[in-house]
Image (cartoon, rainbow, N blue to C red):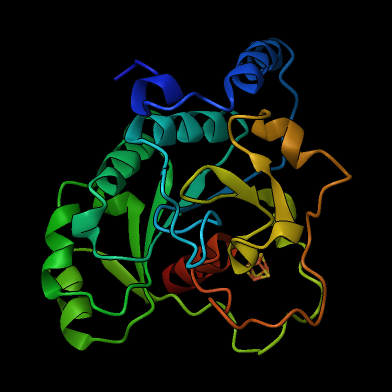
Length: 250
Ligand code: SF4
């Protein structure tokens, strides 16, 4: 699968990112020529939510091909772990399996599927059966024993997605310095805790190379102490999830 669809292939309306995309393409070509060492280890993808309307559900999500472009670019930065946070049933997100397979087969990435929908059924696991289970972990927000048991029955490693217990960030969190987080419509954020927050919006995937975003000192690459964890409580945060996996294998 090598074709790379752009906005015009997917949407009928005029592409508001046409000029930025052209510039981005040129910059990406350059960055391939002058690639420097990067510290980015983690990619966090939200396929269900972003910031475009009141409930955070975007009207135009990235296509599967565009998500694969995100994986390609993250891989070029050295990303080894990707967590895909899914806020509805996997039945509504067939792209998740494709993103996982691309990351695993093309780049040998370890993939975490973080399910934070409250109404999961035991059959969710069937949709991920084809993945490389040695490189797949499932992180669950819900504590439905039947869902957990079904994933385990199919050979998946399953972990609770809870990141940290505190009600507020403490101390100041610098984990975003080695992580990039992309919402369902392609908006870049400091991390999943602040998904949809304008103050922590780093731009859009079509606007600039990820490398440039990650090394722009004018953008917020940390979360200040005291920020309330009212929404996701850091659940699914890739470096925390990787730590859970490593602790189990010790
Ligand atoms: S989700 Fe929480 S732990 Fe992860 S980077 Fe954000 S503030 Fe830090």
